[in-house]
Length: 212
Ligand code: PRP
Ligand code: URA
Image 1 (tube, rainbow, N blue to C red):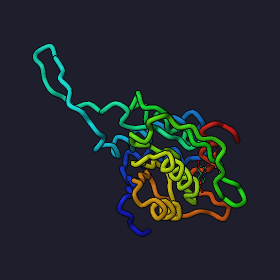
Image 2 (cartoon, rainbow, N blue to C red; image 1 turned 180 degrees about the vertical axis):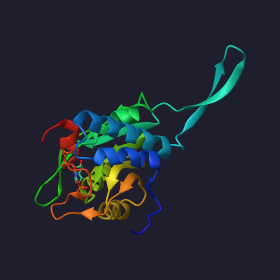
Image 3 (tube, protein in one colour; image 1 turned 180 degrees about the horizontal axis):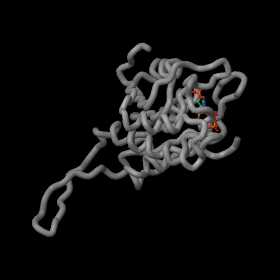
Image 4 (cartoon, helix red, strand yellow; image 1 turned 120 degrees about the horizontal axis):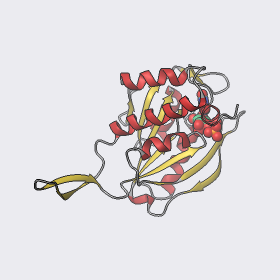
């Protein structure tokens, strides 16, 4: 696959270990949900080494010192419904006070085109880093549409987090939105003839919420 400056693929062994269990068809809904959260936390930890900070004074039992803390409202979490919801708690583990906006998109099963059915974003989102969440980056249509929404709302800095992606989806996002930083835990081979990622993990929404 062509290399893109703003696309990071984590090939971290501890993340890969969890992705192996996530893919397994025997993994239960509860385990699947927990793994999605854990992988998201690990990815965010790595992707936000440059989060904006401020210096504060802290009085320890021994003396006063200076320490950095994350600035208020540094990030806003934006899951793409439904499956992105499974990643929200994983970000809240590291940014417990982050506000959450929602973008509802579903893929038409025939055309694979994304359709919007809901969008509610917090006031002031444009002054924070928007963390866009979706476990699966397949054709990239949903991610490109969600980024379009965020940019129309004035978001200047957007970071997309996906657990599994394929070269087609990476190309679509990187070429439509070269300024957006994309973080993917694992790059898979391709899309099959019905638009599913292979080897993949199946339908992320169904496995998270038990709908099939
Ligand atoms: C899945 C997935 C992404 C999208 C990826 O959602 O969670 O949003 O497909 O495909 P794309 O890159 O080709 O757009 P789906 O539309 O199945 O909706 P769901 O989350 O409600 O199950
Ligand atoms: N959405 C999913 O949930 N899984 C895929 O493989 C592709 C899109």
